[in-house]
Image (tube, rainbow, N blue to C red; front, top):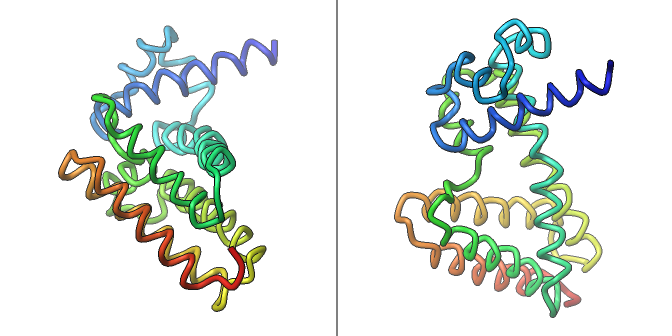
Amino acid sequence: MAKQAKSTRERIIEAAGKLFQAEGVKAVSVDAIAEKAGVTKRTFYYHFRSKDDLIAAHLSANDQPNLDFFKRWFEATDGDVAAKVQGIFIHLSASAKHHKWKGCGFLRTSVELINMPGHPAIVAARAHKKRVEDWLCTIFEAIHVLETARHLARQIILLLDGAFSVVLLHRDPTYMLSAGEAAARLIRARSSVS
């Protein structure tokens, strides 16, 4: 029975994710989510207290997979740490060329819910961005950056999230490549070991 409940919950999160990606979190109704997931509203509310809880669960479900993409792209890129971080931007640029690409779901959701800083989805988005920053910080600590690794990690996050925004605004993935070049230069300038 627990397995069925979990698969139903996952089905609801997956259905919601597709709708949120296509239409945004505010535009999608609980009725539409339930219909797409093939469940009743009663079943929906059995698994989630509210749509707000579902939005947070959707972002939380994407936290580790998104971080795993960054880690895979980092590891798959040859070269020093600067080149490997730049590789993340290169892969994101390639992703942004897809006609269905809509940028960072964590940022898009945060913008939609900007007037609700305590919203569970904002908390989940903030936690994800912090995990990416923490991962970068660990990498920079290993190469003995000349200033605090945390400061450099924050600078890279700013380049990353700024690039997400500008690429989405202009529909031009080359901005992601430019941000990656800037990130690589910054890392090389701040590190004592490549």
